[in-house]
Length: 395
Image 1 (cartoon, rainbow, N blue to C red):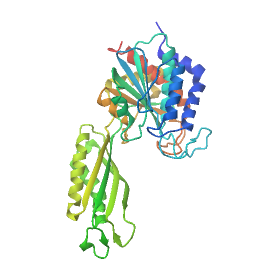
Image 2 (cartoon, rainbow, N blue to C red):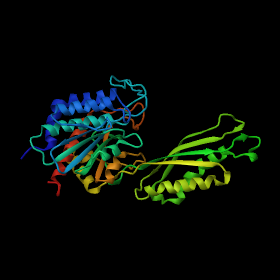
Image 3 (spheres, one colour):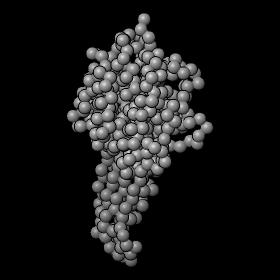
Image 4 (tube, rainbow, N blue to C red):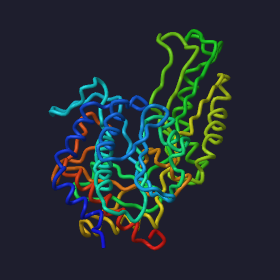
């Protein structure tokens, strides 16, 4: 019998863990935002090619798909590769060299881990199945890169898909698992109000546009919560509001921008109609003109129960019961959800917080990890493939 992939991963890490850390630091030092990950894509292709693999760049110029095995049935592993438009405030040797851009969400970690998994797979004497590696661009963008991958046939022949995401709330060595919704749908709403403008001394002679904006800001979230089942966990939060420049002049235009999030995938497609209808009803008595641009963004990630069972078995096999942790539902969006519109899948969370360290969050300019988490991610993914191939129906 051939050795397990997890055993191969342990052996590989014993020789190459320094390279794994080096890839992560190289990526962290040169972050690139969505659809501009050209250097990142070049590095991925170079490393995969050094393993004797045949990576394929996406036609959009960034992102990579690499098959290991001839199929026809693939299990897919997804890593996202883009960074955020945030400054890097860390004082470390591998801090971002690109001003205003930072890997503040751990995508460099995901990419380095999947490169290492590719190295383990490439050296295996015989694999029980075929694997598709997806290095996806633009996870942080709307529309995100998952749609580009799907449109280029990235899921052709794929039966299941898995992904791993950093979680600074979990300590190193923990794997966060959850059946069902693990992230929310994330939708963006932009509203533009227009009116004739006028003097604040005579609001009765014009349209009080700022008053109308205030009604929208306060009433729309509340009314939305009365139109949708509370168990759907709908949240509308405004992030940007602009209007006017003079204290004594009623402006002619104003804009509101925010996000609408929801855990219930069944109601996701109804949100645009409900939100738009309520917004128009709220401002109708004020006589302002309203223009609504609603971007449906991404649906919720809902993990397949049978695949979470495989993830759990993998964590137990590789690390023991202390590694398995419950993880809370997040109201953040994750475009891994687009893959799950086509095939079943599951997203797990990787603990990256040093033991005893303060809890911090993603999307902060000081985000960093305990680099011991890299090897944990590689071992977990290798064990996941072992358990997947050993499961009934996947032999």
